[in-house]
Length: 239
Image (cartoon, rainbow, N blue to C red; front, side, top):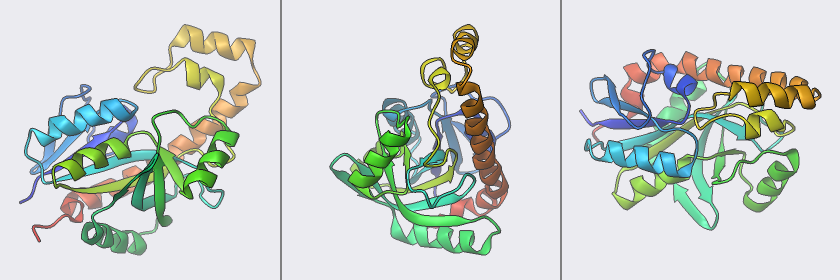
């Protein structure tokens, strides 16, 4: 059986696949032939996690988690299976046979899904204007911060790779200042500064609830799919 390595940036994303607490950067075999690594947010942490999985001699890598919509057609909770990862001037093509097998499975599920491209950014795409500019530049449907790093390692070492993302925030949703400036690399709030920011700018509290609701919908979709994907070894084959 081929070995898979899965990278999740956030604990809640990883928990959709494995209920126990994970240490950042320490891969765990969650079932035979499937390893999961919690990376933390961003390109460099995902690069490091991918290298840790590479050392375990995995055959394929999966970028797993939520993404932000930059195309208005996408809704929170909708799944996206990108064909290409776009990072600045680089484009990484997803392993087509693997993508086709998972796409067929998604089409038979009850969860709405879309195919297209994901832009992977080293910077947080925080405002609606940022999202509009990224859409214009790339033509992608959504944005994340880890998939390009995973694709980079996979491509450099001749590994298959796949990206499975669920939409969290919609294209018209901005990331509030409290979340942007006062959460850590695992998405956890630095409580005192987070609360102070909300007290000083109470208008953002509503935005935080909107963001949290979208995130919850994204996680719900991932959680619903996880058991079948694990049972089918994420539709990765020896062929």
